[in-house]
Image 1 (spheres, rainbow, N blue to C red):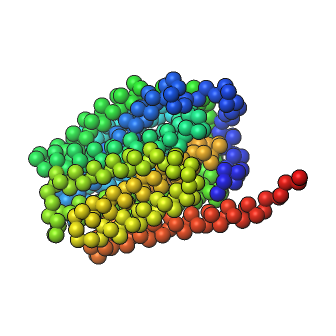
Image 2 (cartoon, helix red, strand yellow):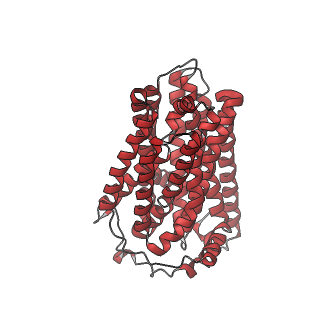
Image 3 (spheres, one colour):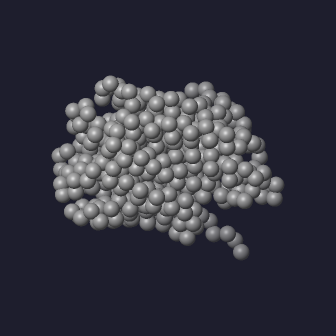
Length: 431
């Protein structure tokens, strides 16, 4: 599981565009902490992350209210989340191809503009079907953000600062997810779910405007081809890389846990023995602050434990949180959510940054494949987690999550074994 294993992914990607030679450390003009533009870039992408997750999961904390308004079960209401993440998963790869031709900043700006416009229409959905359709379109529009953002960072930020920079973007995701759910919970308690998602739409408009004003113009981007044959060949090369395949699967499995837990938790907490009001349930999502910290410190975690060690720790933390959440005690459930959130965001930051470092060509497509797998995991987790809750209660949802964590640990063990085999095969240098 070393970057040296990525040779297969570097062949056809060069057909898309030939990057300029990497600058020497002494003349590297890319952004670094303390350097010009780094702070503006970090804040801009942080706000983009806030807008993306606030919009993408704007209905998640409101599912019990949506179920009541439209008279549908949890499994049907969960499609307002699954459709958005599914739309993102389907369109993230085509959007990454557009970013290769038209530029990362242009695609991210256009994506946010469309997404926030749809966000202002969502409160007026007359039926569950229309609501799901609008959410699917919104997810498709947001697809231009994740992969383009990671490719922008890989091109414009120094390698040493890459994990930290991506961690800050992921931290923006966590703040957006947290604030969106907290705000919608309290607004919905007073004025209903429609007003709540409308407020999120207005907040996202502000974030989108600030993002465009703050983000520095790219200096190391070279336009390339978006032809279907080049795109297919680049994707094929990335999927032929065993390390990238493992990272994609890990991202999907982590998000399966997270999507299932946070889609269903509102139903659990509104029922016995907790019977919490909507505002309090929304405030539960303040635990996302833990994710902000764990994502932004992922770089130091990798520095101490290595990538695989960090993934083991993230998986173990997530599993411990799932088990604690089974307790019929609100403090224990909250502690479980804290551990699940910390483990998930740390694992996601480690895996996504490893993708950006591994892919030396076609970075937007490599990141897009990761994001596609990641949001497929969210859609699967939301849907299967809700179905498991309907048939087996919270224990059913936890069971789905534990299976996904087992998959993360198994894949990481496979990578560890592959790395040891590769190390044994390396020739011993002559003295």
